[in-house]
Length: 139
Image (cartoon, rainbow, N blue to C red; front, side, top):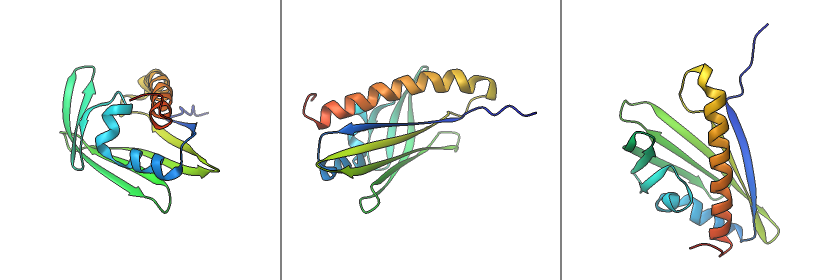
C-alpha cells in the first residue's frame, strides 16, 4: 500500500474585468509585487523573492500566450534549480476566470502537506487581492 501525498492545489477567482485587462496585468512581471507576497521586485529577467530568511535574487522568465490565456513563470534559484508557477485567464462573458496551479515547494516529503496548506491560504488571499486590484477596489 502506498500513500499518495497531494503536492499541488488549484484555485480560481472570478474577476469582473475584461479578459484583455486581466491578462495584460497578470502577464506583466512588474505587477507581481503588487498582488503577491512572494516578490519584492520583478522584471522581465529577474526578481527579488521574499523568503522567511530574507530576500533572494533569482532569475525570472515569464511565458505568456494571449491566444491560450496562459501566464507561466519559471524561476531560476541561485543553486540552479528551477521552480515554476502556472496560470490561465479565461474569458467569461464580460468578466474573466483566473486559475492558478500551486505546486508544492521543494521541501522534504514530510513537510509538503504543512507547507502546501500554508501556501494555499496565502494564494487564496493573493487571488482576492488581485481581484480587488483589477476590479478597481485596490490601488
